[in-house]
Image 1: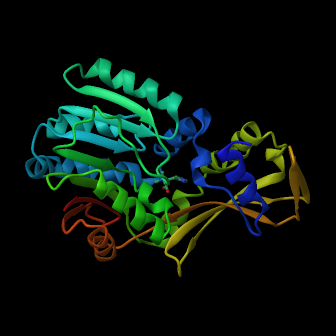
Image 2: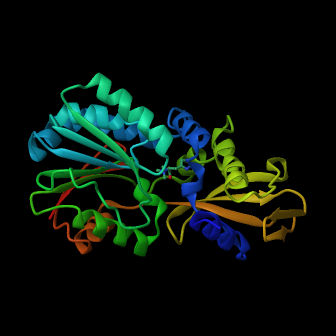
Length: 304
Ligand code: AVJ
């Protein structure tokens, strides 16, 4: 059994069952996520883009030209394209969990920006990140946009920020997007859109799991559930069984009673002060944050 299969079946056997959000991102899931970023209800992507547009020059002035930009979770490489132009970067290293999708996007970016040295490789951010030996160690800018940090609980986020700090010398910097706490109706609509795209995204994880572990989840037996958990300051996504279900996989299986859930994602929402504190604990002591006029999202530049 592969590491992934072991991790998945372990999570599925818990009560309540869990499945890591990284299993959203097979080729189809990455496509659906792109669709999510264009939904009217899903404000983070467009708000972050607006912040980058409004404050790009200020960011460029602070980070300077000739950086090696390392994007974690690069996906379609679209944000990198614009960042690398804005700050006149010399290299771009794309890192993502979805290898096939990433290679295509990186190749496209390289063709469009021949002066930028582009490379791509697959990595799971929940483990140590080993960059290829030919990535220059000086003058790095780790780029982690989209509030992907929101997927991790506090200790995990802390550990990930520390791993990022370890990728940098003292001349390095981190540019990170983080989603902020706001009106619950705005938050919940962003994760339960009217067109059902987020529901399809959530359900697709089961199709991905079926392929990874040979299970027999029937997507029709499950529905998408998303809500804001105030105490934990996070959006939670779950898949809820709409009938009594029995799922099998090689060497195991389990039953789910109607109404029972699989917890598939957390998306933590921060405030600027709390996030700066988290960065400080991870070894980033100088931070500057830019936000949109509504203060829905923040782009933070953090230096050692
Ligand atoms: C990619 C983790 C930033 O939490 O907003 C979007 C993922 N899940 N809609 C987020 C997601 C449902 C997204 N991140």
